[in-house]
Image (cartoon, rainbow, N blue to C red; front, side, top):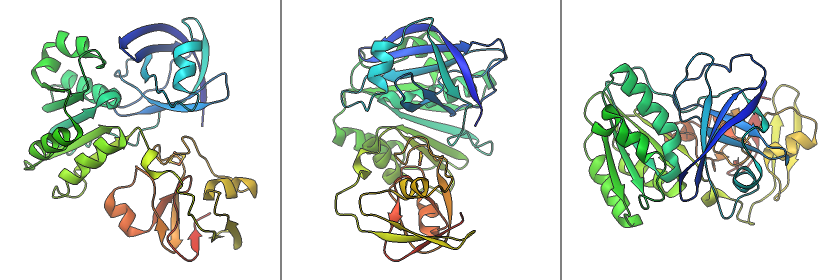
Length: 319
Ligand code: FES
């Protein structure tokens, strides 16, 4: 994956605990084009690599904008960006990847964001608004002080006209509002959901009756899918070489592959970015990611090897 050096050209406070970072090319070469919903890997000087959605829309020779929420239980990414990165610093980033793109077949986009999940959704809203495409944006926030981009949404007449704010709802009220919003699928409407794991899970559940392929989602938290400490050892067979590897109970498949010198690309390590997507040729995966749709999980044809395991027996992977 190509890397790019970027200059942190501007940092702004977007809410109580969210900072916005504007990143410009540090080399004079334009940054690669991206579509709404894309994210980038940000490689931090402390060795951490984190994924952040791009909040703006692409403009030639333009900049990238990301927004970072300070997470109390940060694994070293958000705290570092908040406390140790200043305007004028140089960072290394990867090219944009998009696993959450707008479907060109959609006749109407229903955009649902919970909290910091606004970042890719705002890029989508900006893109659709600029193209004059119909959309509705439902933005769930804890309070106005906690919400990023309220000024942006209120200052732009087209964004303001299509945005509804839900402020300070309890988890139960959020679920019930999502159920209401998603009760009926109007033909041609696609829904795009981004937010913390429980928000995305509630929206997916409320949209279970929607037609397959019309529900798109991205999650920012995989906390509910962390190791339980009760995992069991299993075997994976690498179809291209015939090698059989044991995945210990305290190891992921990706860790095992790397330890055995088998090349596998990973990024988030949490089942939320899709980088480690691997074809499954036989066996039953125990899916623990937040990326695959229910139909992809049921197909047993693909899995995220950074978090998912075997549901019993051996897995044969296309590696
Ligand atoms: S590395 Fe991100 S889903 Fe596996």
